[in-house]
Length: 245
Image 1 (cartoon, helix red, strand yellow):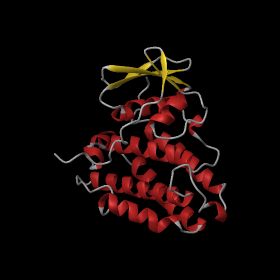
Image 2 (cartoon, one colour):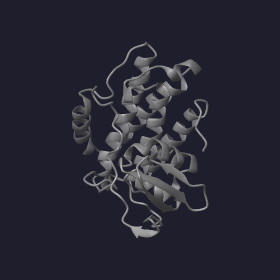
Image 3 (cartoon, helix red, strand yellow):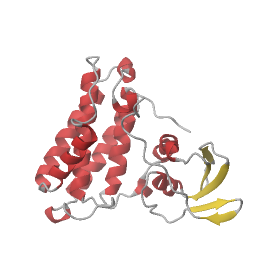
Image 4 (cartoon, one colour):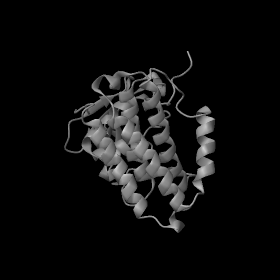
């Protein structure tokens, strides 16, 4: 499995941001309040979140370069949710301006990093700037698909899907071990439980399912002891903030 390097990550962030920007050009005013692929969220909600997480991650880096830490969102998750609800109904022009400004700020922050800066501590997941860069790549790529504008999970790259397998291992319930068997590719085992479940299908379908999204190619199948079974319920998405100790 290929791990993305700090040297390559800024270019991947630019690619992900470019996809979001291109999708925005496909939208008209009427499409903003239409449902996204996320239950209960319109496309406006998704755009508001993309702008919000981009600003939040830029701020993480700006503080980290001064040797300081700041919470991911003003007001924590409540503040995040309120900001999304307030901005979701904005006009398309306002969303474009907000997203473009936030993406530019975040990309500039990552582009300005020196090699040693990637290990600076940030509050996101009690991690490093590298963790923040990987998170922003996930957010931009997955939420671009959530817009439902023809750029679904089937477009995700193999390195990105394999990264999700690693990051989302935290969603495997304690009793299970998932044997991921993407078509035509080596299998991957995630989880450490005593009950093995084989998840077979196209690589992007497996990644989409782990990410809580609808597999767009319809190829998934789960088996246990050679018998077909229902896909197991997953644990929640890994939290942006570490659990209180």
